[in-house]
Image 1 (cartoon, rainbow, N blue to C red):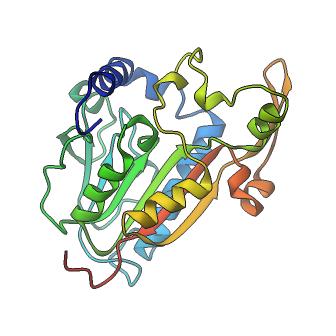
Image 2: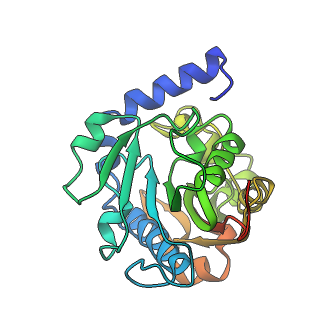
Length: 255
């Protein structure tokens, strides 16, 4: 959405209306499918920071942690309390105000604009279920790289454009769900990603040590029922429903 355009602004406003009061987030975060995804995001962040408490270990630099677009429930709430400041930043004050008190510092910002943070000011960034909602993900990733300290970690999650069930649907001539404009909320997803494309955009933004995890590989068997496997998701994350990517800003980067 950075760069203007009526279509981009209309999409921004549609997303804002949907997620402003926080209820849309709270409606799904405790679902087992998303609960596993959120645990994977948290685990990837702790791995990157070098300790179960997010301490200032050898896995990453000292400094604050930032979550972009948490809505009414922060990923940080499910982690051991880190020995670092935690900042939760969202476009909606209403969503932030409805979040449980977690000792985080709330900040209102728009991720489609330059982040109001100093260069190299944070040690880790979480952006869960966010990148698919912006028109220009490369611009957002560049801003995240700018505010990360050298060696700092980015962990993000996004729905997979090409999970196993949608590959089957495509072979049968049916549209993948992520590009279905009639879906009750997926029409808000502007830039869907495959695992390969997610690696590509992260590397293009200057990130290194890119790795991908996933929550479930599943197949819909009708009447709202799914066959789901965590083992297959660990073995073949590119076939999973949600992609969880972790990456680093290269150590020793001065720019």
